[in-house]
Image 1 (cartoon, rainbow, N blue to C red):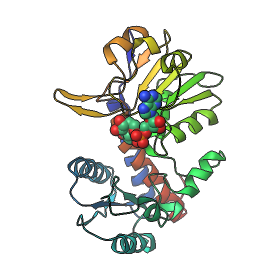
Image 2: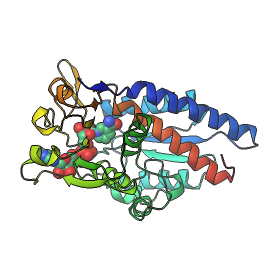
Image 3: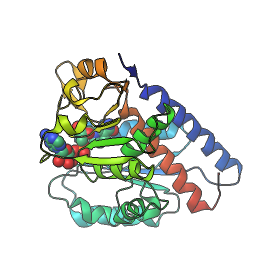
Image 4: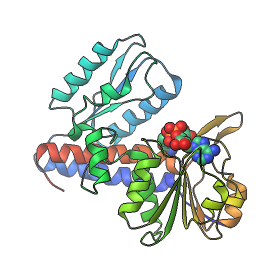
Length: 285
Ligand code: NAD
């Protein structure tokens, strides 16, 4: 059966490395990176995510510059807050926690985040840099998947990679990051015909469809590396988009849920925040 990829352990190592980087930045005469998490309203899942991001950023030696606005804050108020953070030199990174309340336009707000402070990698500028294969801040979840693949020395050059899902947040940047590493990339989505057949081509299968248990053992090539990005809260805890037990019988390596990709997302957010601070302060690594 498959080797289980330990995202919790890799994420801890990444965070420790970020912590050392923060200390080195300060020792070199710089200022500790400041992460401005922005939460609008009281969505319980978002509150948990933001609390964890704040706690782990402080643990890495960063400044917690959290801001909270009520659920009924209007577009102009949130825009003014983003502009204020954009102009504040203490703020290295701005993280606008999504989803926003329905009456707000997320795209217009993300567009106000300067590319240099866009630690979620969601602005069109950073998406364009990624598409062109140029340096920039990368979306945290797909960057975390790449870090896991590298940590476990999964060969990518020339490999068949299949990404299930084409969202702006996960699937599309995931495909581009794999392409940048010379994988042969196929992107599947809700209109894909015969999903298991396409997935069975994959040496590296990344599933980010948001459908619990979508991918079973009939979609896994023997020995493949299976990365499950999905997170679903059920009666008996968290589960992913992959039928873990069945897929683990066939795969060579697989991420669990929880304890796989999830912890990597925050680790990469911290890594991005450190990178942003270094660039803004002109102090290299
Ligand atoms: P999304 O809903 O924006 O996108 C889902 C994608 O899956 C779409 O492109 C859609 O075309 C595709 N899809 C839907 N049904 C499909 C099907 N039957 N077959 C093939 N493709 C199908 O979701 P997202 O934001 O990309 O997130 C995907 C999942 O990853 C969710 O479960 C989300 O909770 C999770 N997620 C986890 C993390 C993390 O930190 N681990 C971060 C972001 C998202």
